[in-house]
Length: 152
Image 1 (cartoon, rainbow, N blue to C red):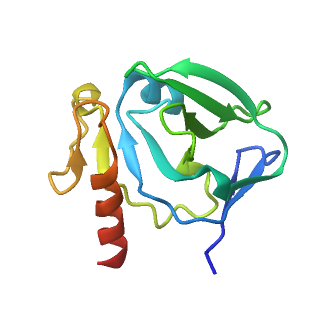
Image 2: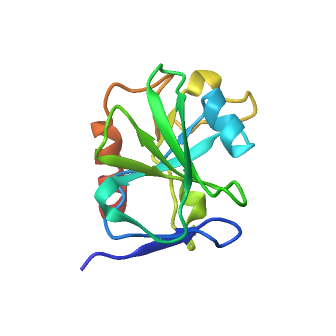
């Protein structure tokens, strides 16, 4: 039986459950993620979209064009504004969960960094992680790195 990951927005009006395992976790340093997170980077935890269930509330959605030129649908709480998920147009089978919205964040450990050419100068990137100057064409190396880290 899979573990159930639970999370929600800051005000508690939206709650979700994830019934599948994360494919990886990474930090993105693009300007859009910096704005969205109000910080130096945003984090993403891709999971199979079918594994995500909204159990309370209904997120609002808007679509933006990413720095790579692809469309991303952004789901968030219309009351408190917490960003919950991104649905990338490049892969309709994936939901990028914003993992800071999980109830338990103690286990989060990114294995990679995207858009490092946009990283703030004070951010120190580990050479042990997978680092991409921009948007990678595919994520198989990050999926493999995550699997190895979990099993290692």
